[in-house]
Amino acid sequence: MTSGYIGRLAPSPTGLLHLGHAATFWTAYQRAQEHRGTLLLRNEDLDPQRSKQEFVEAMLEDLAWLGIEWAPPIVVQSRRVQLYREAFARLLAGGFAYPCTCSRRDLALMVQAPHEESDDEPVYNGHCRPVASASSTAIEPGMNYRLRVPDGETIRFSDRNLGAQSFIAGIDFGDFLIWRKDGLPSYQLACVIDDAAMGITEVVRGADLLKSTARQILLQRALNLQSPAYFHAQLLRDEHGVRLAKRHDALAIRTLRQQGVAPEMVPMIAQSLKTR
Image 1 (cartoon, rainbow, N blue to C red):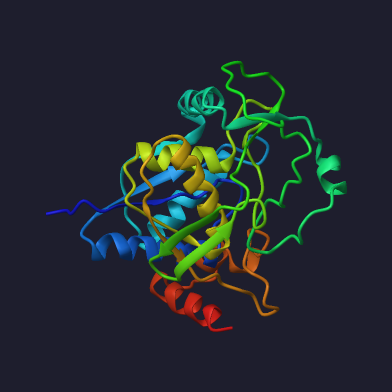
Image 2 (image 1 turned 90 degrees about the horizontal axis):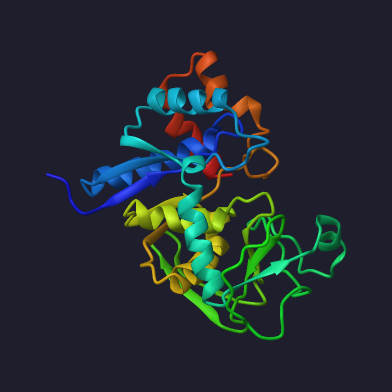
């Protein structure tokens, strides 16, 4: 008999899965088993330049090799763009979002808070932010859109692994991207919509996404969606102390498989990297 627990795996097919992914996904699998719950799989393929079918096939093979099981069907983000567009339209109508004309070069030249390893989006300086919020239902093509954050408000949540967390809007993170000029949602918006639509009760992911959780809580609030619980896992690092990424080919699951490493050895190898 299953409980009401629903977790998820959310890999992106932009490269081979590595030990860091394996450790986080194994934790998600164990959490679902401990709660006698359900684990779902989401293919986060919203990067059209880097997402490849060969990586989709590889991640499915690697997860199966690790012994990680999930309940069908697989959710594919590229097939759900209309759902994201409808949510984005609601944000526009509610006055939560505004268009941004800043180029990547503009953003690079702005005075920003130091770029942190734990965050993939620097603090925006509000260059395109309008003086007052205004509702609109028109989506301008070829335009980026940002969510206006409540400057000075502390966003708090209790992480089931790392304890109490808090981030200040406008200081720790600024107005963040929610819709891209190529007509696709940002990671933040797509993640929030899918977690809600899939009925996810606990999100297990890496500690590098702690600040993203604060952003996503603001999106959930604006869209009247319930927030799931969060469990952020410790990151794995290489011999130089750098967190693992898809560039670490030597620690890719596919490479370990080719070297004859047994699946049951992977959690022990991952644990050794956690202690560095």
